[in-house]
Length: 123
Image 1 (tube, one colour):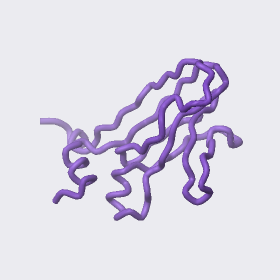
Image 2: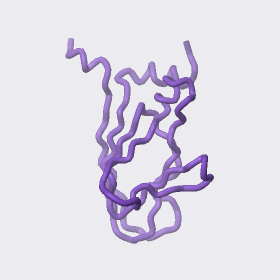
Image 3: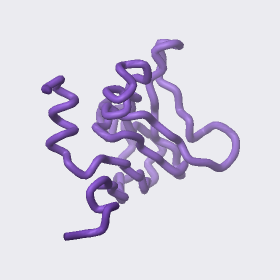
Image 4: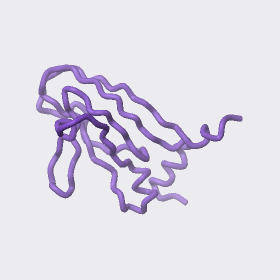
C-alpha cells in the first residue's frame, strides 16, 4: 500500500539544460504537454516561446517584466474541460549563444494509462 496521495500524483520536476549553440532553429521543437498543468519559472537567458492563437504569433513570456512562473495548460486539462481550455503550444528557441537551464514542473495524473485513454477518447 501507499499514501492516498500516491494514487493521484505523478508530478515531475525536470531539469532541462540547453547548450549555448547560437541558432535560429528551435532548440526543442513546438509541442504540447500531456500534463494537467506545466509550471515554468522564468529563466535566463530567455528561450521559451508560446504560440498565441489569438495573435497568430509566437510570444516570449520570459522577456516580460518581473519575476514569476509561467503557467501553461496541458492536454489533460483540455480533456477535463471538454476542450474549453486548449493546451499551450510551446517551444524553446534562443540565439544568445549562452547555455540555458530551465526547471519545468509537470503536474500529471498518477495513472498515465487512464490519461492516455482519456486523451484518445476511449471509454
